[in-house]
Image (tube, rainbow, N blue to C red; front, side):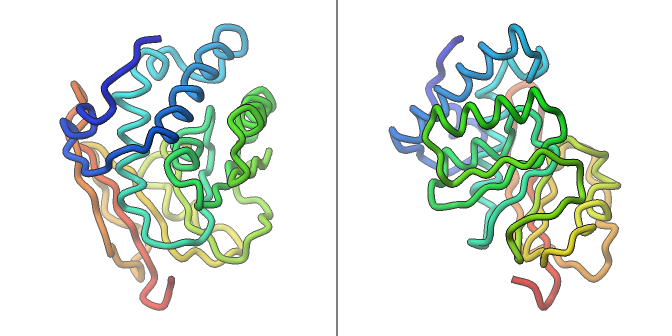
Length: 207
């Protein structure tokens, strides 16, 4: 798999993050493992495997720049681990809970957690909503449902949501939960895919 100049890629996307050598090593190991597993277990689609750095990494770094609380980050319908596993590689102090219902994908996620030595990752095989060990959480999902439907689905949990993140492309529907307020946003650009945005939403009394 082709390797990239991480700093140049992020600079071109309009992001300010500079990755540590430790994070770069973990990210490279993760993408290599995903590529190997996908040859026989189909844990990631062909489009993702063609451009993991230009899409998955850039999306995750943008999300990392938008994170605004220390509560566990729950990645719903994480699939092969994006963006949650990448956030764990970027922020070793951040507890990340990966929620995924498909057995072969959760097996891959647990393999990566062990192989990369990521104690800040928990893997939960379940459909959403599900029971979590944390009382207060941040929550994100990149692809489990349409952006219009995601906020209403996200809040179907007994845990207190301190931050809700929306990952948006050209289609930027209005927020369906009227009491929530956007407190932070990060705009960036993916090569050949155009502008994207991460939004962090809170209740006035949240977080």
